[in-house]
Length: 358
Image 1 (cartoon, one colour):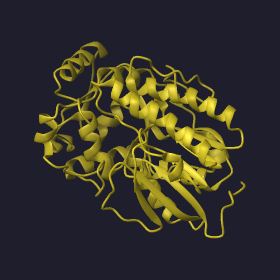
Image 2 (tube, one colour):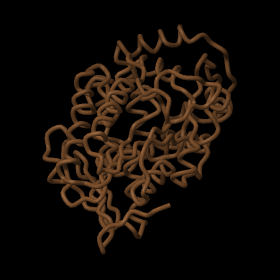
Image 3 (cartoon, helix red, strand yellow):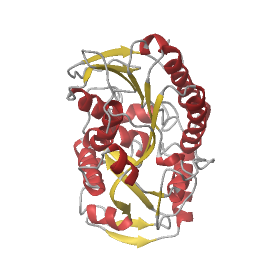
């Protein structure tokens, strides 16, 4: 495996979206790598969190001069993503797609030699649940869900970027669902909303877990995702890589984590309840995202193991159990996305419109 060369003081790595779930884990991983000299963390709001080798820049990917920020960088890693407001798809499209393409263009203008992009399992077209697919599976997403539609669109934009900038080493990761303890409060705000009490996720409290057709997905720990990104920064690899840990998550595994039993239910009524709650702004997660989860394929991660030298240290179950523990403890970090109790608390979430305003 060939290492990527840098300056005498080490690589200068810019991480866009450095204060979120994967970003914080990646900054920590890069800070411990002797091949990395400087980390530039880019975020809309400067964190109180401090990490060695790291300097912070406040920027907005839709409006800021990104080429100026990327000037002199050896590698740019793009992790920034806006999940909410799901009721305002033009807003998420503007940030994720328009902002993402601005990041691509700025990498080219600044002459950056390597670019690492966070795609997703959600970029994949509907696929099988009983056998894994490799990175050659079509990436047209599930067009009804905003998240998967935007991820698929940026895959096409990145295809064009690679053709136009053949001198740039491009790596794209397609991870499963990513969890860690410190991101639990953020993920509760993004997907479950203010009405979910943390005590309900204590083992033995939840009596049943719905066993829905198609409810099989893959997960991994944020530290393992970050390790894959670190390897892509310092090693001469390129192309697409699937990332996930074993085992595949299903209702039985979730029920076992919660010491609950499974109840087989049709997907339609559950989806209808979620849709009604979303339309009433009781939950932020749109029903279209559940539709996408039912359709995403199970991924083969052997390319990452073989060519990147990556293997997860945490099982999917361990990642989920950490997330559940973080929910109970209201865990977080001193960054704006991962704050355990943002200003105004849960009342502010309700007052601003659940799933309506970021």
